[in-house]
Amino acid sequence: MSVACSAAGGINMAQGVCDTDPPLPVVQAAIDAIRSGHNIYTRLDGIASLRAAITTKLDAFNGIPADPERNILVTSGATGAMHAALMALLNPGDECIVLEPFYGYHVSTLLAQRIQPVVVPLDAPHWDIDMDRLRAAVTKRTRAIILNTPSNPCGKVFSLAELDQLAAFAIENDLFVFTDEMYEYFVYDGLQHRSIAALPGMAERTITISGFSKTFSITGWRLGYLAASERWLSAIGYFHDLTYVCAPSPLQHGAAAGLLQLPQSFYDELAVDYQIKRDALCDALAQACLAPSIPAGAYYVLADASAVPGADAKAKARRLLADTGIAAVAGSAFFGNDSDGVNRGENLLRFCFAKKAEEVTEACKRLANYRL
Image (cartoon, rainbow, N blue to C red):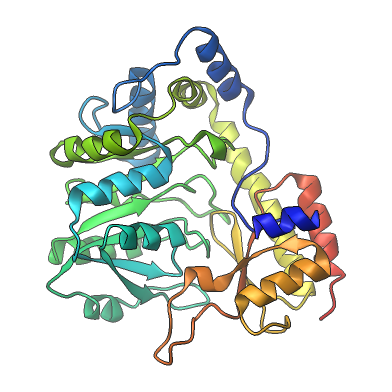
C-alpha cells in the first residue's frame, strides 16, 4: 500500500513510518558520533552509555530492575530483538500463542523459524481476553505467548488485572512471554502502560522488547533493545550477533542522548499530541461511515470498511485509495480465518495517524467529505 500510495501521490496512513521530526538532541548526538569516529562495530550488546540509560529507564518507567552488563541487549530494531529471542529460546515444531488482532511481523517471524503460531482472538470492541479460550489453546507443544501492549493494530492497552491473569497463565503452563512494548509512551485517556516483567515471578520468563523508532520518530535507524534474565541473554545475544553483528554504532549514541537529555514533558506531550490526532481521525472516520474502534494506545485505528466496495479488505483498501487518495492497510493482515476459512479482518482497514499535523488535517478533511 505504501508503494501504491506513492504512485498515486496520496497520503500514506498505511505503513507505520512515523514521519514526524526526531528530537534535536537525538539527531545531533548521532551526527556528532559520526564526526567523532564512532563508525565501527560496537560490543554485540551495544554501547555502555545506551545500555546504562536503558537500565535507568526500565527501572523508573517500567518497574523492571536490570543490570546493564547482564540483562540488556541493544538490537537492530524491535524486529531484530524478537527474531533473535525466538531463535535462541524456541525450536522448530514448538507452538507460540499469538493474540488476535496480531502484528503481522510476529506471526511471520514465527513461521520463518518453523514455530507454529496459535491464534487466540480477543473479543471486540474492547479486545477483552477470554481466559477459557486461551487455556484451550495450550497443548503439550506450547512454549510461549507473544504479548503486544499497546497493540498494533488495535491499540489495546492491557490493564494490570489482565496482565495478572496472563502472568498466572504463563507461570501455570511454564511459558516464555515475549512482550513487544514499542508503543509504551503512546497511551491515552489517562491510562497507564504496564510491563508484565515487573509482576512477581515474571522477570525470569519474560523477554521485554522495545525501541526508539516510534518514540523518537527514527524508524529508519533500526534501533531497539530487549531486557531478559542473564540466563537467556547470552544465547539471544549470540543469535543477534550472528544475524546483525550489532545495531548501528553512531545511531546508538543518538538514542542514548534522547534517553539522557529529553525531559519528562517530552513524553507527556507526545501522548497529548497523538491523542488529538487520534480523536480527529476517529471523528473523520465516523463521518465517512467507517466506524472506528477507538484505540487506547499506539497510533493505529481499525475501522469498519463494510460499506466500502470490494470483495475483500485488499480491494477495499485499493478502492479507498482511488476514491480519496488515502492509503490504509487491509485488516486481513492482522487476523486469522474463522471456521469457514474466511479471514476475520476482511471488513476492516487499519489507519496510521503517526503523521505531521497538516497531513492528518488533510486526511480528515478528505474522509469527512467521503461519501459511500
